[in-house]
Amino acid sequence: MSGIRVLCPPLLAALLVAGATLPAAALDVIRVDPAEPVVAGTGALTGITGNGSGGTALGLSPERARLLLRSLTVPGWGQATAGRRTSATVFGLAEVGVWTSFTAFRIQSQLRRDTYERTASLFAGVSLGGRDEEFRRTIGSYLSSDEYNQLVVFRDAANLYYSDPVAYRQYIATHSIGGRDAWSWDSESSLLRYREQRKDAQRAAIRANTALACAVVNRLLSMVHAARIPTHAPAHSWNFELTPGDGSDALACRMGVRARF
Image 1: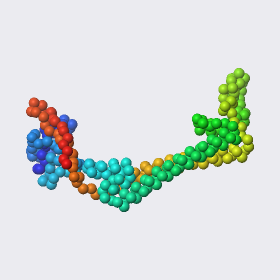
Image 2: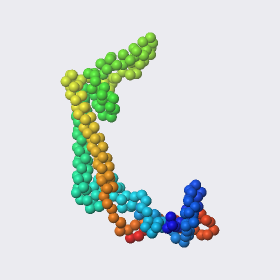
Image 3: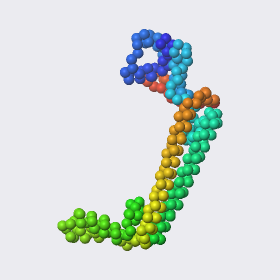
Image 4: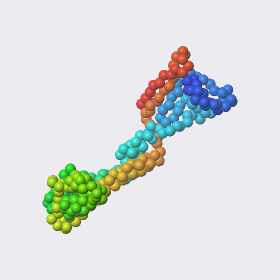
């Protein structure tokens, strides 16, 4: 503790107000020097020394933070910056493969989606443009809209309004499918083909989502790998300075940023 210097009276006052306590022996050797600023930057707090051993590193250095941010943005970028060409190539190729797979599966999903929509239009007489997934699933579950009305709508109406004929008929009129929403498959084989085509489209969409998950994993692995790479002091740095203000106010201070190139 004999080598500790408190450079800014406002900081000491703030610590005491916050409830920080110091040993009595330490209070005897603390020297206040209001002429020198507290300078923090490049991951170290300078101006606080102990036994002449230099500053104590706190947190991430700017260079380390840049490596992590680059690896998180583009896997392999941080490794390339640090001169790790082999690992940068591995992560870069993995990233290219992930996005290539994602693009391929997205295109495949759209093509298969167009295929089953065309099947429904040609063999069931219904357009699926702008329809939700529930309607697309329903078309693949019943041979015709009349069958759906009889098996689903009439049954629900009977269960809900068996003793109320008016409400029974009103429910059927409201929930029955007809008009431009009606469909009728020409054969059961066309219906089965539609179901299989729709499943293929869904599987391709799931694979595309899996590729996105792999992209996230690749970034996390690249960031973890970059965190283990030794770093060196940067050629330039920035410093945040906190200096006491005029003598009229004990808690007054000035702040600024200084860059060194």
